[in-house]
Image (cartoon, rainbow, N blue to C red; front, side, top):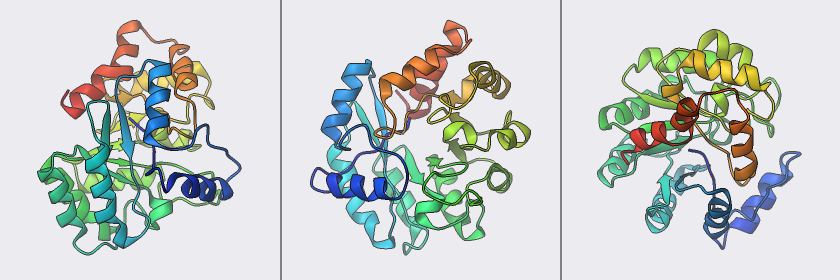
Length: 259
């Protein structure tokens, strides 16, 4: 439920720029071709490709590329920028074109998740039945006190928009898992596992999945920032039943995306 890629001509510059902002190196070149090779190696059927509009005028170009790369193996989430004119209207257009949802990243798009200025976007997504996948918790490229994607802000969003389908990446909040356990577990949101299973004790991670409800947790990797096969191995080490693991690996996402 969480991969990234860029147009072939842009990928080298995008990866280099992102690597320069944080002490982390990509595991691949960030192209769709490399993503498909990674999926083949890890025996992954479908990846959800998340885009991020970091400038208001990028939306049209992003959705055009999304149209080109989506396939039976690559599902794609376009993105709107909070300052894009008629951002909510763009969300409705995405729904008309059959996209499953959008991706938001508070740090790279410079907004707080619970900013009332985002309410029109959230309301449009809820009205159209689109999911929103959002970066949640801290981000390694930003300061340790940056709370724009904190669990308490997620709670405010879902309290204001109870019909919104919200997918919270990084098991609800990267390096804010105490807050996730206190505020988010059991709430009407989906959690996704990227960049969490390598930092959490397996028993704790499995306990969080069970406490939240295994029907609302989905597998993700944040490729190309983490290897898909390594993320799968971490998930398979969790003390979950086969039925619970299958829900996280496939059936929850398949139901949400309409497969």
